[in-house]
Length: 364
Image (cartoon, rainbow, N blue to C red):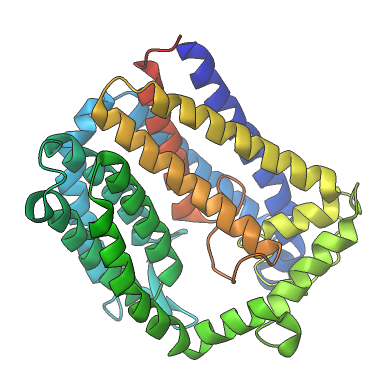
């Protein structure tokens, strides 16, 4: 059974990555030719991301996952430093008013993606070390809240509210399962609500995203454009799709067709069967991840796998929900499928960690 879980995780991940490569080329080839005179531009870059991700995945798989605990604080400190550096003009790369990336020749590195894994590893280590004090406010609850708050503040300054919300949910769930008093978590949640309201409704583009989510047709050529074009793509595909490579929405109608809205192109070209197939593959992946969590050999492995599976699941649910118009627009990629350097690489690393934990688990 140990071998079966690892094989299943590996197989599902490879299938999703292969689907992603095909769909990235299909969704981006015309745009790439128009802008770079190379229809393979994004595919070639994505393949390079895959090679980097495969190397890092093999690295984390070849190291006993219990040694990750030794890396928890150094990686957390590194991610904190990178979040500070990316905000410095001339160091961090600014795109459309957001300063979230480092430009490293052929790859853009987003430090918040490293922060996600760093926080999960740190939280798993913290919960393991402080298991007998986890219900105490001062020793068990306040330290992770302080660190989460510092990381969240830096990510909000980029600005990137969606990543903060996803990371906050993961940390809260991990702490709740670890035994932190529900009253502590609810108190922080209650205090955060007014701040969340201000962050959303005091910033014009975020407020418009909420308005376009409630009614995209209030501003069809503006804030509602992406949602409307995404729904047109999904609706045009019908049950069987218009055929691979025959999407019309990718012809400069649907922005970010190969990144945030690649699920919509899958729906248009491969139809309902294609989208349901991708969802089923993701569900199977999560199911295998739950097996790793349930049979983790120790507390650290249990909470580490929980955080990793939850983060990947949240990304998938949010991306698909946004594409279908069920959630407000947020630039979270579809795991293993969307084009995106650092996000794609760290999703692969997460799978390597899960397979490492699965190797030493006990399965009936």
